Amino acid sequence: MNVAVCFNRVPPQLVKGEAVDRVSEEGAEHQAHAVAAALEELGHKVCFVALGASLPTFLAELQSVSVDLVFNLCEGFWGESRMEMNVAALLEMLGLPFTGSPSLCLGVTQNKSLTKALLLQNGLPTPKSLTLRGEHVFPRNWNLSWPLIVKPASEDASLGIGPESVVTNEELLRERVRYIHNRYQQAVLVEEYIDGREFNAAVVGDHKPKVLPLSEIRFDPALPWKLVTYAGKWHENSPDYTGTQAICPPQISARDDFLVRDVALRAYKLLGCRDYARVDIRLRDGIPFILEINANPDISPEAGLARSARAGGLDYPQLIDRIIRMALKRKEDCHAA
Image (cartoon, rainbow, N blue to C red; front, top):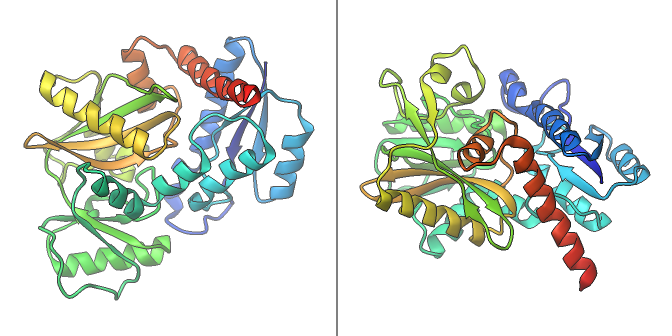
């Protein structure tokens, strides 16, 4: 089978954020090479189609290659992560079968405020929050309890998240809101900080999704907060990175395991995720609070989703094979209809 592995390139100068954000922004290309190696090991023919500054060039290259499937690893368009959904929409308009979640799901989950509203409307627990759309737009009263965590409302990969993201008074809150608004040029999500055990629930599947073995994030007590910061995820020599360890599978009671898996699976289905996704959860007093739903998580061999897959008996090529089989099944079902 001929497979086009699509990924987004990063501009020489990022349009927003910090210079160090390049590490995660360039992760799509790293994933692309890992996925390509697995596909070739499975016997498929692979070509790379990179999305750079020119959309017409990307379109022309994509249409010039004869492929059976697109493995979509695009996380945005030329430094704009909010364009992630647009790339999937483009593939949908071209009628090209592709892996991963559809455009609507990617658009909704990229908007953390909208995602949280949908979760609450459907009885799924998530921390109390408010969304601020300007650095000076503060409500007179809010029903949130300190400490609070401040984050960009439309980013992933822990962009904009550091120890300073957790605030304990209004002065620090305003300072961090101002920083996020100015540096990341978007609305700011402020939510209650949940002090509990943190789990990553990787989900794989289309019509019949399944939660893979859970992964627990354990934090060094020396860290100021239990928090997966940007440095903790991407900067290997930082105290945040060495102080943030994933345990898969973790020691967890049968009841708590069921609760975390249940809300993860319900959230996956509610948001319309497809093929694979990761749901981040904090468990406090028996309540699994959904922190985030990443419908396009890092799928490189060393990342959390592949780690959970290995714990569930799937090596990396087998995980990639399962994903492309689901995408091909959708193609067959579409033609049959």
